[in-house]
Image (cartoon, rainbow over all chains, first blue to last red; front, side, top):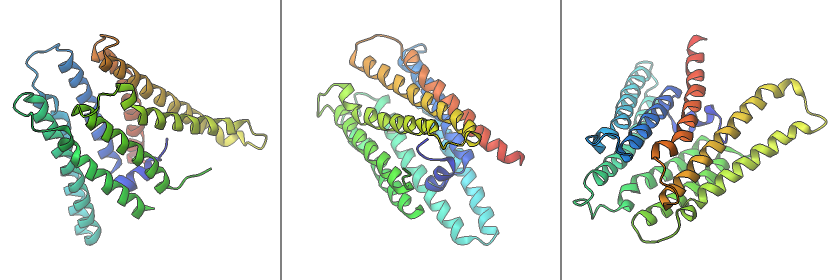
Length: 138
Length: 134
């Protein structure tokens, strides 16, 4: 709507299939969150709720590794390294945020000093990186 | 009016940043604002998007409009408008749930979100597997 799919792929540096994967994970995740918050199932721990997001990150890393190896074999070495670095940075920032959030939610009492500013800080870094990348793509 | 990619990114970036900051402050109990106020950047951003869409759709009424190219884009824009309204509905119900105005289940609150995500998945999936077949 605001961005076309082509622009999104260029800007985010993810393939369309990876975007699809992350969206799917988000949908399953939101369903699990709803289940957990409404307390339909008592024994669903927050770590289990976050599994779809972790799985999407893992799969995305796997695809990126394969794509980068293929690019490297095709003698596109610079592109391969750049792509690998970018995607790994984004995914690791996302993962850090998810793990911290999960820990916070799982141990309400013990994690008092883990304030939300700290949890969201990877996202702030990610936002700056995305802004810089948008300028470069343009 | 056509904005460049950097301008559009900047627009979404500013609103995302303000929203994140407000959200963090609220969650850490540094400020005690109403949740509707916290979501103010989201409301503003959505209304800007809806306005832009409506202006574009109103462009069909111009006398020099070529109807042959418009059919596909009209459908697309109607879907975008639906998506935006779904997102708005989700945020509104979420806010009123967080404020405690209603006691509905989160599962009910999330229904617009799931419809929206499902639609987005279908659209994305179509473009993924359409390319594959070519």
